[in-house]
Image (cartoon, helix red, strand yellow):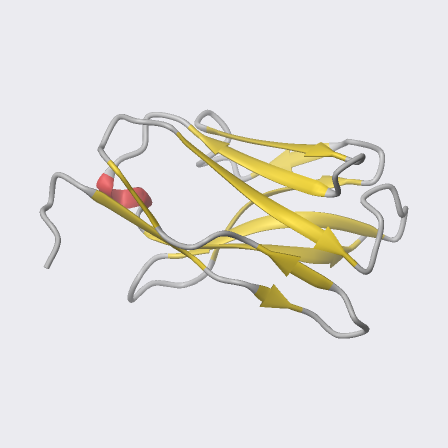
Length: 120
């Protein structure tokens, strides 16, 4: 059992069809009010491929999936109105990584976080 003063974020590896793989690190625990930085390593497609965006979504326990936002081939980003003030998505095309930065996290942000390729 975890203390209510801690925030547990679980991450998993997401594998898609056509030899596309998006991989993420394991789990982390963050105290409320702190920031987090999650990275997603992409292989099997390019972050500059105009056919795709890379999205971050989360799944709080017992609730529906929640879209956080995405970054597209041009670098264009779009965010959930509810979360845009606390989350930022960036990318590094040279290392094929997409990063999610969260600020001032609270226990309500506890979820499994996923990155996923999304058709543009």
